[in-house]
Length: 322
Image 1 (cartoon, one colour):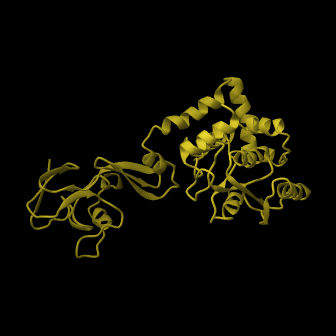
Image 2 (tube, helix red, strand yellow; image 1 turned 180 degrees about the vertical axis):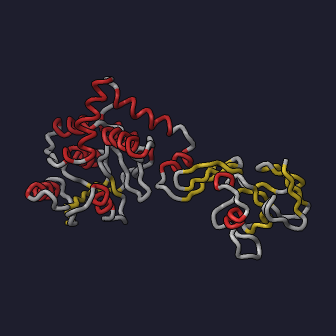
Image 3 (cartoon, one colour; image 1 turned 90 degrees about the horizontal axis):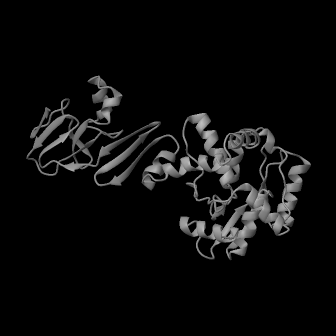
């Protein structure tokens, strides 16, 4: 397929931009974002451009801003980046024009670099998402950097080269680590991407949960199963089940003839019905290890915790260890 057709197929498959829709390209002047701006325009999208000038490289930064304004028709926004880290600069850029659909020129080459960086720094094989949580889309994620450069040259499109890239963490990965891996095996980059494709065979909701920034989050996977993430820990728990007759859960047999009761796992913030005491404090008082709390059953009516088997009894609820 032609490069342009591959981009369109990816955009449609991932639902990144509505057909003929408006999109704001965040451009640096480099080959990737210049290719992005041109390809989306060729495909009939309503393309505009925006360049954020951090002013960190003096005359070179001025040249980038001038190129983006004069050649790509970009709006130029000046945001002082003095003393900021790469992550801080990225946050500055993504904080602009948040009311519009924005696109960046990230490629498969960036994807490989991201996977390697995260693998080395956190032991995870997560990569760049086609769509960020804030709505920024990445239509070029299936192209390699050399393809965007070739596209620009074939069409006579000028582009800028950032001389500071070599001094960044990404520059180290790009210029030293990836070439050495390709000396080890000629298809090293493609094989690294396969690690990401393998994890994407997970349920999309579960993959999103794994990719989310560390914190507390729950995802209903259906069929009575909920995935729970607490910081760097992940576990599965059953969705609340009706307590009709008898339910087995977490090493307990729980019985009750009372109507409207359900059994589910513990959730941070749970409190005993009619009391201010948190279930977490119940566990602490009983010296229940944190590793055991997620699988401990609670008997609930609505959002109220009626009983904690083995720890807090309630009239009409009988719980015995199996």
